[in-house]
Amino acid sequence: MNNGQTIFSQLIDFLPIHEFRKCVARYDGNRRIRSFSCWDQFLSMIFAQLTYRQSLRDIITCLGSLGPKLYHAGFRGPLRRSTLADANESRDWRIYADFAAVLIQKARGLYHDDGFALELEQPAYAFDSTTVDLCLTLFPWAKFRRRKSAIKLHTLIDLRGNIPCFVDITGGKVADVTSLDELPLEAGSFYMMDRGYIDFARLYGFTQSMAFFVTRAKRTLDFSRQSYQQVDKSTGLRSDQTIVLRGPKTSQLYPQPLRMVSYQAQDIDKRFVFLTNNFSLPALTIPMLYKCRWQVELFFKWIKQNLSIKAFYGNSINAVKTQVWIALSVYVLVAIVKKEMKIKRGLAEILQILSIGLFEKTPILQAFLNDSVKMENAVDHNQLLLFDF
Image: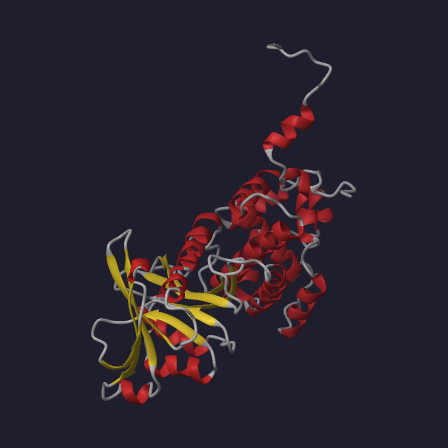
C-alpha cells in the first residue's frame, strides 16, 4: 500500500537504515552535529543524483520548494548550501563507501542466480578502470597531465547483474596495474582484464589464490611451447597451447605453465591471443569469456551518462569520493528496486521516470507500468469507437 507516501519515500524504504547508522557510528560521523545529520546529507545527495541537479545551490533551491514533503521523506535538518558543502568536505567518505558495500552485497544476492552470456557455474568478473577528467585549477590534488587533473575509478563488476562489487578511486596518475594489489580474490572465480594489467608477479597471485584470470597476451611475450591441443578451426579457434615463460624475469615471476588460446574474430577480421591459468574450460569458452569484459565498459558509459560523476559539488578529495560513492549507491539501489519489484524497464528508464515524479504520491510500481498497460486500463468501454468496423 502507498498510504500517501511519495515515490521518494517509498524508494528510501528499500534502504537498510540500521546499517547506515552502523556505518555512521563506525566513523563517528554525527559527532558535534546538531541538526544536519549524515542521513540528511545522504538524502540530499540522492535527490541530486536522481533529479540531475547541477550545483549545490540548485540542490537546495529545489529541495526548499518542496515544503512539508521533505519531512515525510525523512529530512530533519535545515537545508542550506553552506551546510551541505561543509558536510561533503568534512564528513568521512568511508561512511558512504561502507554503506554502498552493504547495498552491493544485497544486490549481488538478488542477482546471484541470473545468467550472462555464458553458461558458467563459477562467479565471473570484469575488471577495468575509467578516467574522469577534472579542472586542474579546481582539483590540483589530482593532477594528471600538464594542464588537467583526473581521477580513476578502478572497478570490478559481477557479470551476473553487472553490479560493481569493488571500486577503488585514485588520482589519474596511478597506473592501472597497481590496483590489482587491492583486488579481493575469490577462489574458483574468473577475472577478465585487458593486457594493460599484465604483470606476471601480480598474475601469479591469482594462481596462488586459486582464482582464474583471462587476459590478452602482448606481442613481445617470450615463451616456449610445452604442448598443444587440436582445435576446430571452423569456430574461429586457431590454437590451444600450454606454454612456459622463458624471459629472464618473467620466468621467475610466473614459474608455472600458462594456457595460450589464439582466436580469429571473423566479424572484424582480427586475431586475438589470450592468456589464462585455467586448463579445464573448453578452448572456445576462453575468448567468449573475454568478450564479456566489454560489460565493464558499458557500465562506465552508463554511469557517466546517467549519474552525476563528471561535475562535482565540491573540490576536495573527500567531497569527490563522497559524491562518487553515493552515485554508485543510487545505481545499486535502482538495481535492487528493479529486481525486488520485478520491473521490466531498464535502469536508465527507471532513473528518467524517477527524475520527473520523485515527489508524486503514487505507488512506486504504478509509476513504472508500460504505457501500453496504462492506456489499456484507461479505455472507457462505454465509449463508442470512432472507427468501428
